[in-house]
Image (cartoon, rainbow, N blue to C red; front, side, top):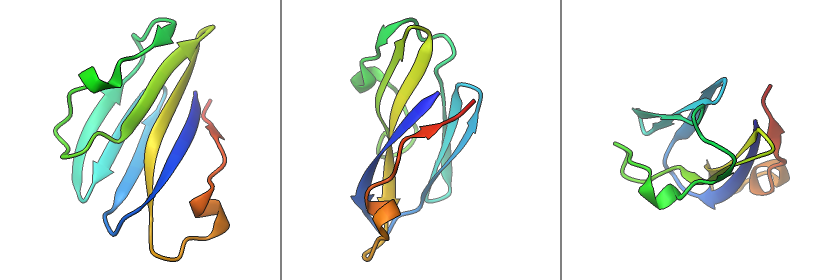
Length: 93
């Protein structure tokens, strides 16, 4: 899986636990699970994703030639490091 992060300034806490093609997002202590294992090749209409969180942290998801690519929201504080402000994509095997 290839993960792109979209940084955003926020005082809220948002973390991810990734197992295979399942992403557990924890927003301010509340969790929701996003399972992409059944996603076929192509782009997912993320506006159709249902979540119990008050914002959907999944901004984009698609599968290209069998590889899952996901864009996730990534919060940072008021004075982010360059790595927080401009995060590199992450490869999860």
